[in-house]
Length: 350
Image (cartoon, rainbow, N blue to C red; front, side, top):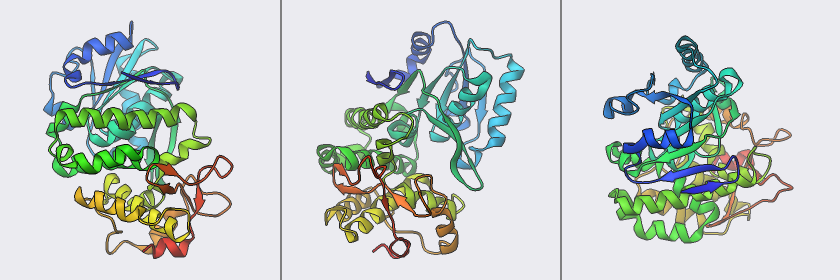
């Protein structure tokens, strides 16, 4: 079990944890009535999960992470008579944990919740840190709240059922965490990638523990995203713009892989990033069959417009959290841990 200071949220990483989810919920939410907000695909694959609790189903896919879904789920809670002794258990990928956490943050001005991520992306990143919210036509996660879960429960055995592409795309957040904060973990990933891709349980458990610990440490130092937490957005300035410009046909994991490589190439041209960093990232991500270039046909005007909406921007400039070298970030507290991305370099990053 890991802990971070922000809310002292236990991070439970344990093969077989899903089999004892009822006991874990009773331990972390004593005296509360659990109500599951459950990804529909997970509900089909694991029909016995929280059999005694009401199930509110959420269709899979980023397109369902909306204010309309938040409204429907909130109304269903009201119809169930949920009160302050109720608690949300959000079970699914990042869409489910983001949206389930936002429902918990806003229902009756806030009820407790537990995150049970079931994808590599959610385990390594989305379910940790208390950032909850929904997307809008103007961009991702522009409406939300900070609301720490009482626990995060990650069972690496669940990942065996993921489609290959979904599994690999989720690993990009672990690559990012190693690239921003732990050079030894990055080197370990380079060595142990065959075991990770084979979904070896022991290797996966080690990867999840180390990756989750990095995010937890960053969040504990900056829970409300006032400074250093911006480093967790490495690769995400370009990633979010590419997702938006593609109408979310480009998955988040694929977009972050592209963003990590292209932002590092720009950083090298700006002399902020150690030469060779982008090549090392591109090699590892390429071995994972992840893209490292913007997709052909991406609308350049839509891409530029989406860049202008990034939450890190200041005074009309596009900003990004840039890697200085594998295991360390450029920037400082004074600069908000971000650097200006010249638009002409974003359009021609190589």
